[in-house]
Amino acid sequence: MNKSQIGVIGLAVMGKNLALNMANHGYSVTVYNRSEDKTKQLLAEAAGRQLTGAYSLQELVASLERPRKILIMVKAGSPVDTTIEQLLPYLEQGDILIDGGNSFYQDTIRRHQQLAARGIHFIGTGVSGGEEGALKGPAIMPGGDRKAFALVQPIFEAIAAKVGEDACCTYIGSDGAGHFVKMVHNGIEYADMQLICEAYVLLRELLGLKPEEIKEIFAGWNQGELNSYLIEITADILGKTDPATGKPMVEVILDKAGQKGTGKWTSQVALDLGVPIPSITTAVFERYLSAMKDERVAAAKRLAGPEIQAVRKPAAFAEAIRRALYVSKIGAYAQGFSLMAGASRQYGWDLDLGSIAMIFRGGCIIRAQFLNKIKEAYDKNQDLPSLFLDEYFRTSIENYQQDWRDVVVAAIQAGIPVPAFTSSLSYFDSYRAAELPANLLQAQRDYFGAHTFERNDKEGTFHHNWEA
Ligand SMILES: NC(=O)C1=CN([C@@H]2O[C@H](COP(=O)(O)OP(=O)(O)OC[C@H]3O[C@@H](n4cnc5c(N)ncnc54)[C@H](OP(=O)(O)O)[C@@H]3O)[C@@H](O)[C@H]2O)C=CC1
Ligand SMILES: O=C(CO)[C@H](O)[C@H](O)COP(=O)(O)O
Image (tube, rainbow, N blue to C red; front, side):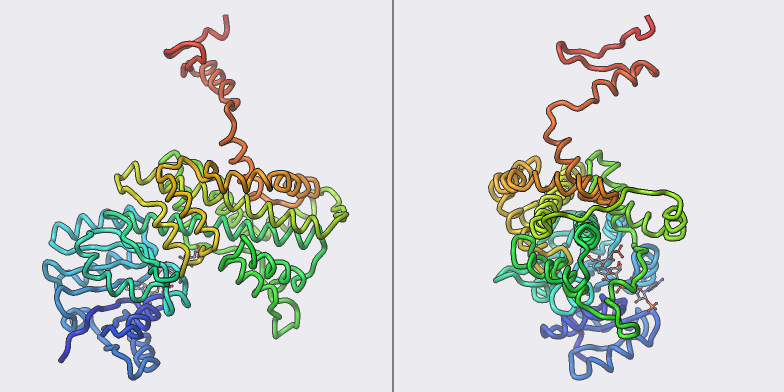
């Protein structure tokens, strides 16, 4: 019997579609899932393609050509460790395990070390694009053993999304680098989604627009510099009707956001690395606040806010919202890319931020025309301290910052929460501030705890006798 070129374990949304994508590109694939029904269902759906089913891990391993290449697409966390443990007895030195789930990068570093000690190569790879991307072309962010990656590179590049001639797949760096970058991708995704939601609520509450009208505005925005997958699907969502009630679909969905944890990890890691990412963290907190639905409903009955005043020039204000959204988005991406730069220094990954922007251009959830500008910025200066300092982004903010401030002020005066717009703006203002009030903060620390301070007129560390 001919051996398959690659195996896929885990046939839920992602694994199933990645396996189909590989088969569609002419690769022979053996598929396995813990519960057999998913394997049988996939084989039935994919009749005629080069997919072979395996009903045990031993059978899967035996069906693969050497060195074996096995893509694990199971639920992130302990299921990945369980799967690896169960596979190990059947593997040989030189075999390659690939974890394509949303694994925490520290777990990937640990697994990489454990498997290296046994002569097994490990590639921790971010995969983004959801169900459709997995089938038609995701963005792929592989990290780990570079020589092992070379053996799977042709398969990854074949199935990845393409922008022009470029495959949205590039080697990211050693051990956990690929999963780190995917985690930050998701953190940026959280901020991007929150910002779009804030633009939507401003159009709804300040301009009194209906979903169908907001859909047209988003569709228009998608033709310009905001062009992106998330804006495109937002316009699409706003045009859908609930078949059961005839109401706009968006209006029958409960305002309680879910999350699987990658945004929270991004914020936790940023705190550990000492890199500020307020818009991303705010987006995580807003999901938590949204989940407190009962408490919010009770509070709404007791805590009054201002009356919302109608906006006098709606068309001009809608344009101001667009501009504020664009520059807030620049702020969120500046934070995400700073975090990757910080991690690159910390872990010695030597991340190529321009190449990362390039692979984000296609296949993934945050794909956007705007990423070309980020790529160009890092092509000009790969050590750029912040995207804000690139000429294109600096000029965009210069041109739009009055609208940014006007929109945030209008929202605050109307009592409409826009925490991501606001935190992006405050991040920008803090970043551009030559002086912050941390001088007073240092004095306070020294006053109550003798924590000492530096002076701006001479070198050294000082303590003042505050109570003298
Ligand atoms: N869904 C998405 O849009 C995206 C998901 N991802 C990531 O890709 C990975 C796969 O995602 P998705 O396809 O949504 O699947 P899920 O995250 O929903 O996981 C379900 C799969 O994991 C298997 N599984 C769960 N627990 C175990 C276990 N203990 N041992 C063995 N197998 C187990 C399930 O097998 P069984 O059928 O037997 O229960 C099933 O195949 C995850 O890490 C996810 O975070 C990445 C990008 C996008
Ligand atoms: O990785 C992804 C896309 O890039 C997934 O869609 C992710 O699971 C979505 O995250 P959450 O459920 O936390 O919103």
